[in-house]
Length: 109
Length: 113
Image (cartoon, rainbow over all chains, first blue to last red; front, top):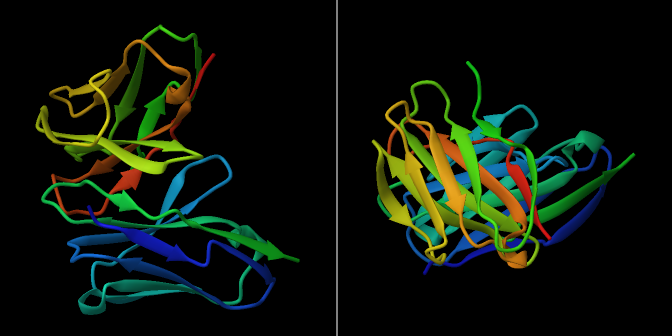
């Protein structure tokens, strides 16, 4: 099956710093989503981005489907950005998502 | 618009028992998917239901089953619970069977003792 690799696995930032999270996948995908998991376990939708570039406030994402990777940019990080960021891809008809292992982000004040 | 709701939020069961978890999707959404999250295996797809039919199934034993009702609400059942079934179970809702953007509920944390 498809492999989804996220890097880095852990990231510690000072408040105000910028960061880039990467998601590589091993096959063509028809769906790609970025999520932020809060401390209570809920997955919060950040982007639905099977291709192209999107921006939402301090966050933006780019997916280059032909090269099988996606990037999540966080600018001017805040302590509330801390948590686990997941990339998930879909490869079959239907809504099955395959998740990466996540990037644990810690933002220090 | 209300989000995805899951009940119960926390559950403690004994090995060998069975458990039923419930998920109500976003109003108007007709696809419901279930995922299991454990520290060792991460987030894994269990199954997807659309129009009361199972559309896709992950690599889980037959002890894990589900169903969807005509109002799109879904339940998943785990029989003969094992210690390894302790996990966060997440339900996701989507407008139709995809690929479409999915929205997750808060999860049910199951502990098996």
